[in-house]
Length: 118
Length: 181
Image (cartoon, rainbow over all chains, first blue to last red; front, side, top):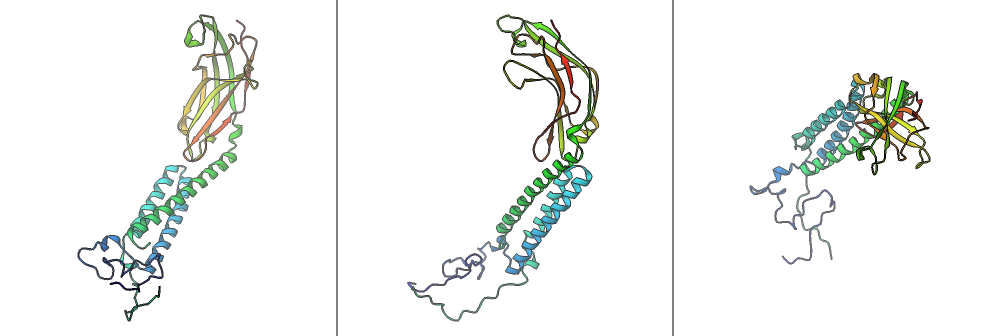
């Protein structure tokens, strides 16, 4: 295994597929011992969607809860409404629902080793 | 946003950011509504203010070495309505009856509290008391109040749910002379 070549991942922020580095590449070949289902991974389009839902719902909730508190003359209603919006957003965004996984990443087939000379 | 931990992190991050913005907006709006309600000029009817003095010989009334110390008490009528101070962000009000008189130790005079009260709800914002006694027995650094005039006024302190403490005073102060013993 003393190769002078290695696989590199260009997108270091999002790519967790260091296939040659980690013996536990649980994403490409899940085994009964892996706990990837606890990680709740979603694809790139799903991440964008979750991000948008978070931003929009919480901003909307802040405006609504401010109005609710101001019009009902009680700031406690602002707190409760905003907390409710936080819980709603969390229940929508945190679990890996199937609509976050509609566009799985299709990797190029392994043809040969990508060679980078050191 | 890739896995659950990242989603929890970015969600709570954005939630806390928006809550801080909500607090700032709430503070600004309550300051504006305090200006619109003209809270700096709430009238208060102070009348029949009588200050009485008597001599005390106890250490707990400021007497040192058994020398007589003049203590003063107050009796007053008060009628005011602090309902404009209760906006949606008001938690409670602290009102205090303050007398200001010239003293030897401070250039801008001494400020002493004779009576105070905590108002927690809007339905108690109307304060109408007759022949109310002060809560506190007040003494000066010097041994006597004799020959001084006190300006008695009512100050309030608004404690909001979100934001800063606000201090102010009502309109209508009254000048009272300390009695000669």
